Length: 372
Picture 1 (cartoon, rainbow, N blue to C red):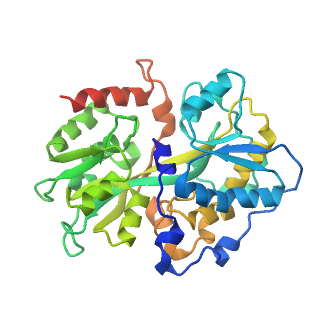
Picture 2: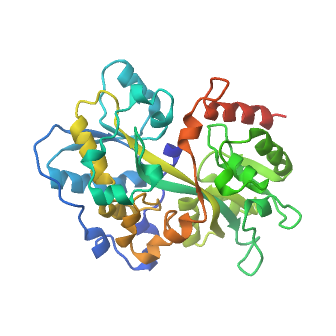
Picture 3: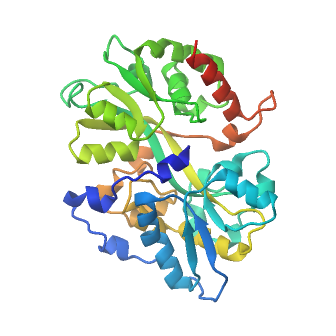
């Protein structure tokens, strides 16, 4: 699911924030990452998303890495879990770094992913990466947030708006049709919001009480016009006034807001979705791959990327190099991150008592509930 986001063709920050007054060639983007020893090494194949993300990723990460290390990088998109597994299973690994989280959080992670060698990371980076970014088989690259969006025609700034999912669920106090994300692909946000609406605190969401979550969903179901599956849908529904409010991805909402498309959003009780780099088991260039993911995790490199596109850095020190008017629009800005909660990828990848992963349990429950 996360790579629907990575692959989305959002306008870049340069295209959408012309009024901010910070050009891509500004001092913030001119900052280089910490120097690393130059060496002639084998080329790397790095796999991630396309569209605007590829443009920003090449400019902020790949091009500087090649200049500073003399290591050639071939960029491939999109990232695909099935292809990664097929390469490992056939002992024909063609990729060195893949920006995709799921394989690192499944029970068979050790079969498909190399352990991250954190000896390749400098101390400042390790000290400033959030805990969710430092895992055994993956290192965080960025984070997006699923937030609560509004139609500004239905809820202008002078009219009360729901500030929590409990209020989003309250159709009598806040009338109007709603939209929420489908869980058919394993996306967890709607179930998490249902638990929050049922009174579960943010720090007590896991392990998931599926019975409570779906009982809460029963209450909101009559108010839902559509369970969306594509990131562009909520903004369209809101700007066309087909719904009064919806869950949505933060970047999509910020672009619409900047374009004056009749939509706004708020951060409270948003779900933070981290995305990670993994190194496929059996890569032909393990050392180079570890150098690349260590480089991409540094504060200056993450700042360059997040100055260009609406994702949040997972290195807290990156905000020293991000222009303040941009920083406040990012999910992991200090004033925003404290209002939200992280998706627990380890929980969703773990096996339940039934022998299925918790994600598979969610999809099964969702499919049955939807047709009731």
